[in-house]
Amino acid sequence: MSTGDGGCTATSLIHAGYEPQDPYRPVAVPIYQTAAYEFRDYASARSMFALKEPGFTYTRTGNPTVAVLEQRIAALDGGVAALATATGQAAVAVALLTLVRGGEHIVASSKLYGGTVDLLTDTFDDFGIEVSFADPADVGAWAAAVRPRTRAFLTESIGNPLATLQDLPAIAAVAHGAGVPLVVDNTLATPVLYRPLDHGADVVVYSATKFLGGHGTTLAGAVVDGGRFDFSAYPDKWPQLTKPKRRYGGEVLWERHGHGAYLALARSKYLHDLGPSLAPSSAVQILQGLETLDVRIAQHGQNTREVVRFLTSHPAVAAVHHPSVPDHPQAGLAVRDFPRGAGSVFSFDLAADSGQVGPFIDRLRLFKLVANVGDTRSLVAHPAAMTHCRLSREQRAAAGIGETTIRLSVGVEAAADLVADLAQALEPLAGAAPLTAGTPAAVISAGSEA
Ligand SMILES: Cc1ncc(COP(=O)(O)O)c(C=O)c1O
Image (cartoon, rainbow, N blue to C red; front, side, top):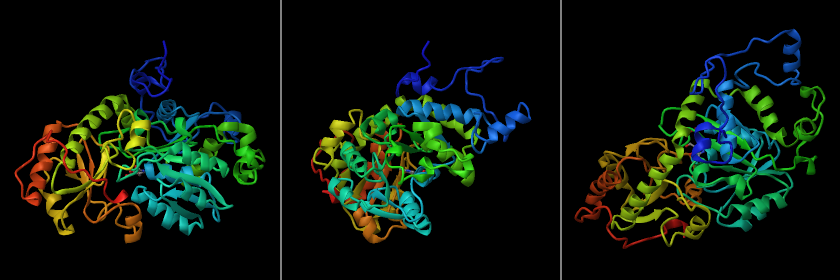
């Protein structure tokens, strides 16, 4: 019987990458809580250290429990392999460092999670890696930003916090025309809503802390290699993959691993040297979350539709930044590319002065003020003061984040309770009678992205 390795299905979410083993045949993935592995003999230790024989040597670079998670995520996204990391932040860093070295350049979306912007503009700047930001809605801006030393494009399939979409195949075509891979952070979409490798991406990254784990308990990340980008077509751009390396006994990674070379380098160099490895106990938490991912995403989506409908009709709301809003600039892309919904993390702007943001948030009871998204619980954040506080005013303006922009992560509670919570918190701002779920949309604005 199939273990469900074919795509992102309800079956593969539960079974892909795991077959119970003798003697006990545990139905749940066992936690191999070990730092290291006893070698069969000295010869085996030598050949494993020389990377000539596959196998686990030390949990920093691989663990059987973590490997199940890696194989499952690779199967869900249609990749050739995946690498789990301790956090999503580590996944983004490792995915990019494997492609880009000091003196080289990245073109990145101007609408990214704030922590990724910190990584690109501060830590990567320290490393001598240069970054240009391009509006994801303007494909020409990506082409114009390419330089001779560009080595990667980076975007989010659904941008955090404004739920920004883009024409991914068009951006992938620009990347490939420039001879560089496209890296897509698919955290807010998950493979249930969108599989970037099917739309031209070459590498997918996740903060598995969010929807994949889904219960707000565990930090984790993943890098998925699509295995299609031909690094050997541009050997001078990627000497780390296409030239002999002393570290690998003078071997060329591309010759040894072919289309698996990118992930082999990520694991054997960056996971090994920097050490942001996922703990096996955390891998099991994420595996357990994955089992219900499609069910949860459906409920997150249903609740989001109710909340968006309520907010778009409220007089105290100036704009709702969700692509399901009919006159949103990416409403057409949402219909084309996100038939199961464009996610449950989005923002709206209060029609009030910025001094009202704090009191509004403090009136919320169900929506918890939390620096996280993708939990079963509904969460609220104020990007200008929290996740995106280190961006300059200009960077925030380019990202479409205003002083009264509020981010919601809509959970899986009863939709009527969520709407009632927002209604009571907005009521003093509108000076109006409380609104109820299902109020017909009246005022819809696409907001600052328009
Ligand atoms: C889109 C996106 N990518 C990456 C990250 C970083 O993930 P983590 O917090 O697991 O390090 C986040 C965190 O919020 C995120 O929203």
